Structures are given as structure tokens and as C-alpha cells.
Image (cartoon, rainbow, N blue to C red):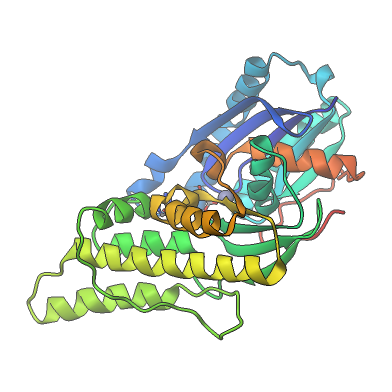
Length: 336
Ligand code: KG4
Ligand code: ZN
């Protein structure tokens, strides 16, 4: 049996979890800072770091108490090593190193995106080869996994992440942060849609680009404004939502076909988007391909997903050391 204490502080969530055997959550405590950042319309790195410092210890204690474990029960400490905001990452890493040093425990550094993918292991066993669509405020990636611990990034965004595009479009339309849920809500309030471009890029590419779509929203608002016309914001939101969902679903389906995978995973905060969930469900149901979408609390940033991934890394012999540092631009390397 392994019992891992996992810590995640890469962005604006301070989280600690206790994970048993890589697939059972004994506790998963998440303290969100959303309200502190909302009035700035996005995450402010310095504020994020300060909040992590204030809440880290309390969150770890609560995770240990809820799971009813003590330090001597732990097999290892896992922590998000990157990518993310460097100041935010460092708070979690220093907490992890302090505990590892004080209790003579091994430490495992986990890649944040690998964590998002392994969140699914807390719900259902992963079946390889699989394809993961990771869509969040910081990432938009299609990752092929031929086996456990092996990652091939087959496509990624060339500019904005999809959640970031939602947040920026929302801001331009005067909607509050985080933009994703608000854009989706507005989009669902109408049947009208303002047609916006689809960014398919080159015919064979699995890469994404969302900055053109964001600009199309800004241009429409500016043009209407200059003509003294009022923009139908709901129709604009719907046009935006339709473009995003069509491109994400289209590329995921094409990748599934090309690589012949039997299981597809959706991960990251944008997995909350019902339009996206429904479009993927319909597409893969027709083809009889298993689609895994974790429950919302495991889609957004949390430490349980870091613990799930760390368990796999542990079984393949990965151990970090106390020289670990935050790696804001860390690449997704295979660990098996
Ligand atoms: O994974 P996450 O919690 O944090 C990052 O690692 O980025 O994702 C947050 C992102 C935000 O950009 C937010 O606007 C987006 O997920 N999001 C959504 C929805 N709910 C959250 N985007 C579209 N539709 C939603 N319903
Ligand atoms: Zn994330």
C-alpha cells in the first residue's frame, strides 16, 4: 500500500490531498482564491503567491486530519514542480521539501498536465493507448499516451489557451472573471449566433490557435461601437462557444481516428463546459469509443490528481531530491 501526501499550488488554488494506491482519495482539500483575483479580471501572480503562503499549512493539516493519517503513515510527498507561476509553485515546493526533510520522506515532482490526465485514474482505470484533451486556463493540448507514463504531445496551442480565450472574450463583453462559465451561460440564453471564424490551421495539424477568435470578438464589438450599434452579446457568446467546441471536438475526433485509441479523456477546467462535454459525448458514442470526463472538482486544479500521477511515477522508481526548484516552463516528459 502507498499513501501519498500531494500538494498543488501552480496557479490560484492551494490544495493538499492524501491518495491511497494511486486511485483512492482519502482527502482532497482545495482553497480557491478566485474572489481575490476576480476584481482584477485574471490571476495576479504576486497575490496568488501570498495567498498560498497564508493557507498552505492549514490546507495540509486539514488534508491529513480528514484522511486520518499521520506523517509516519506516508510513503512519499508529491508536489507540482511545473509548469505554472514560479512564485506560486515555490510555495508548494518549499512546503513539500520541509516535510520531506523533517520526516525523512522521499519527494516526487509532478508535471501539472500529467496530473490533469491522471485525475481520471481516480474515477476509472486508464486504458492504453489513450488520447487526452487537456483544456484549461493555461493549457490546450492533445496528448497521446501509448502506455502508462508515456506522453507524446501531438498538438498544442500556438497562442492563447482555450480557457484564457474564454476569459479574454468575457472581459471584452463586460462579463466577470472567470469568463468560461459566464460566456457559456450567456451563449445558452439565445438561439441566435454571430458566425465567427474556425481556426483549423494546416490540414493535418493538431495544433490550436485561439487568438484570432478572440480578435474577431474584439473587432465585432469595436465595429458595432463605431457604428453606434448595440452588439447582440448573447449571439456573440454563442458564436464564440460554437467555434471553440467545433474545433476542439473536430481535432480530438481526427486524432482518435489517426492513432486508433480506444479511450479518450477530457481534462482541465474547460471540461466544465457542457457544450464541449455534450459534443464529445455524441461524437464518441457514435463510434463506440470510451470517453472519460472526471467530475468537476477533479477537472479544475486540485492536489488529488498530483497524488494519482505521483503514485505511477513512484512505481517506476522516480524520486526527486531537496534541490527541487519550481519549473515554470517544464515540459511534459515521459516517466516510463
Ligand atoms: O484547470 P483550471 O481550473 O485552471 C488552470 O489550470 O488553468 O481552468 C480554469 C479555466 C478558466 O479559464 C475558466 O474560464 C475555464 O477554465 N472554464 C470554462 C468553464 N468553466 C471554467 N471555460 C469554458 N466553459 C466553462 N463552463
Ligand atoms: Zn490546471
